Image 1 (tube, one colour):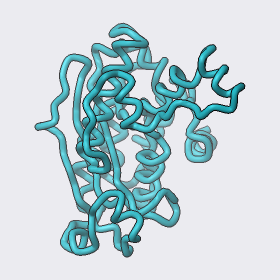
Image 2 (cartoon, rainbow, N blue to C red):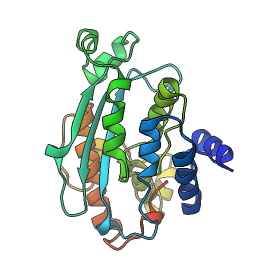
Image 3 (cartoon, helix red, strand yellow):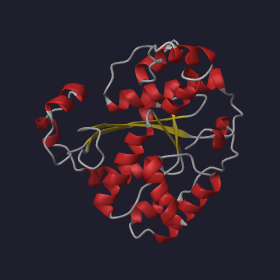
Image 4 (cartoon, rainbow, N blue to C red):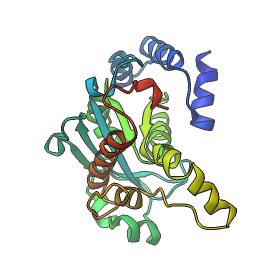
Length: 247
């Protein structure tokens, strides 16, 4: 069952049942040979019936050399812990890491990280224990799940030979659910009009959130945390069940 789940998570990134995630974590905690991964999985997960106001979250963002998980690498990592009542940017982290490949002109233009900067940065493997510790037992929140979950799993597989998969909440998926459904969205499609953007900055504007400079991993993590809080306040409630939102 576990190998089937792994293929499912990797291939589709679709929502799986709460029982699937619980079984996956239990199996990985018993079978992982890598100490850091075994510790990560052993921290477990909150129960899917836990209301959002009782959870600890961590917003996670990566900047990468490109969008292809197989060819590209992580360049920087930002994370910010938060709850429904407060964000904790001072308790967050930012790591610049050496991707061990040359940066393209396009990626440098986007995230403004240069080859000279990453030349002195540590390899991802050296910051991985601290990263996994920061994520362990928390609910990870991202904007576009294929980047953070896909890139981290690929990187950990290359470095440690084992998978690093976890449930998360995707603010882009939430925004698509509310901004691209309903009568108005259907009318726009029927008229051939462009759908509302669900990019991070554009999504924040719909909630009256301030415009931040984008493509800095920690700033984007903070922006994602704030967007999620706004989405919960408008579309859900503090008592919403975790299992309704994680993927």
